[in-house]
Image 1 (cartoon, rainbow, N blue to C red):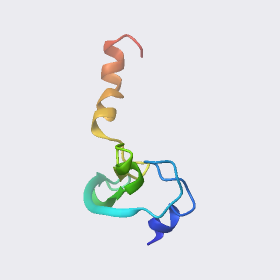
Image 2 (image 1 turned 90 degrees about the vertical axis):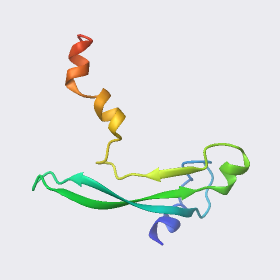
Image 3 (image 1 turned 90 degrees about the horizontal axis):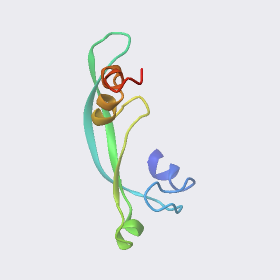
Image 4 (image 1 turned 180 degrees about the vertical axis):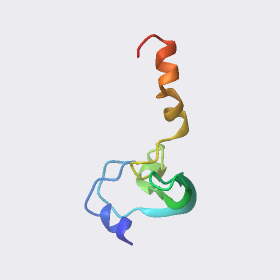
Length: 88
């Protein structure tokens, strides 16, 4: 319920308007704890925006915590790749 309330005051990341979003789904994802080095489960969720859907824009989005980096970005951002381009 906290998330739905949040988007009642902050613009929706899909359409840019302020409205109550619908939670589309909940997902369990494993991340490595920085202190214990163990994999721990966190819950992420996806939102659904009817306004964006009607506009034929992207209308679902997974909301990730800031410490979770999508794998493709993490791979691109690795030092090995930057060194390969002579940029490090």
